[in-house]
Image 1 (tube, rainbow, N blue to C red):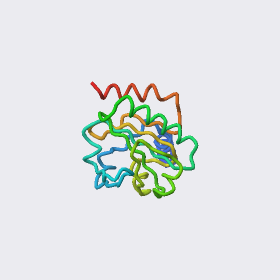
Image 2 (image 1 turned 90 degrees about the vertical axis):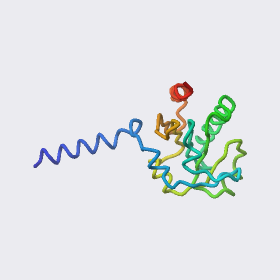
Image 3 (image 1 turned 60 degrees about the vertical axis):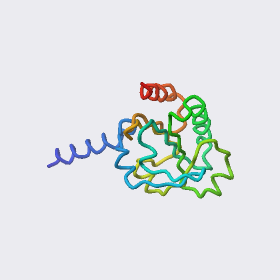
Image 4 (image 1 turned 135 degrees about the vertical axis):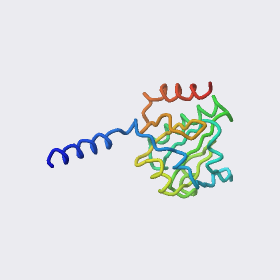
Amino acid sequence: MRHLVGLILAISFLLASCSRGDRVEPPDALAHFRAKTSDGRTITEKDILGKPTVLVFAVSWCDACTLEFAFMDSLKSAWGDSLNLFIFTPEPESIFAKEYRFSIPYARVSKSVFQAFDVNSVPQRILLDKNGNELIRVVGADRSMDDEFEANLLGERR
């Protein structure tokens, strides 16, 4: 019995410590998804599927999030309309828009969207392939991950 409890604890620990390898299946996370963006569009799962999508989860009071916004701007310049780019925040638009001027649509989403994508800290940047499957996740403003992130993105272009 002690061995079984030890085995269960070891497996639980391993599963809890695998943050980068975890894959939340975005098609499930996107089921029944709807959000109104800052540019007036309502986005759904259908808007996210079909081409690579970058989702950034952020808040206005997070200094590290501003680094993600700059990275998103560079992606928009390089990729144009061949890539979906969205910033998700739990904050009201009045607070978020007051802090930043964005060229990328952002949407106020419920905490359930953060939970569906297993986001429990900000910033987080997630690359989804055209089928909505997670390819890579960057937790925090980890600039050392930018090359790997862009390599995954280039792989989607092929």
